[in-house]
Length: 286
Image 1 (cartoon, one colour):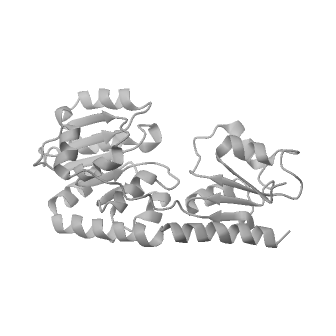
Image 2: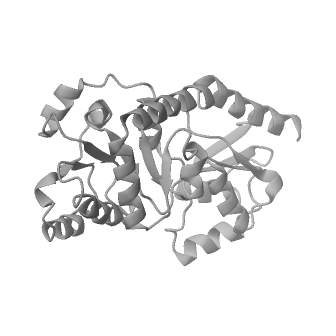
Image 3: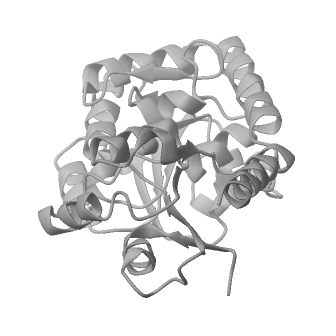
């Protein structure tokens, strides 16, 4: 006889909202972690039909909550509670991390960590890197992760003269420890919830360049703790990367501000307090 049942992601969120699954007086919280534009028509239809069958829907960003409001979830039942700041990884030294990735020590390195999937729009990053090479031929691009887009990305890279400086490092369990190899972190996604890899990069004082989607801009305040570019605009991304690689003072300032943002705004105490407040409010209003 639980007081609250909380579920995460589509399958579990659907199950707990079906009749007869959860005891009658139990409060139901469903949790979504992404702007789920990937969902098929039948999944979205099911979400709409069940929109009123939970006491609260929690998104990890305002973008996620807004997406589900459009599907019919009442605004009074929507909440945004962000991801918690990840534990600060014991990163390797810059020298050791570059050795681990097979990178030169004395060149600028642009990095991405995450799933190589279409929504990450890494094709835009590879194109932008090819443009950047026309003025910064010493730069290197590292993609850590694996996924369905990898063959197409490698095929695209093979058509460019910059291919020797594009590194597909695959899945690595030590990825957070390798952030010190990068001079700048890039996230060109077309949709997110709240990116853990972006939060990890910010936590580690890396200057970050992100697409200007709402979820990214909840973490990055352009010009203050990172930089942004218009989604899908490869020349703009290349120009932004060139700007940040040319200006060490800018990189240091943005990196320091990014780390302060994560440490202050996404501290475990703040996030757990928000969850506790939600639980108590649901129990206090039967």
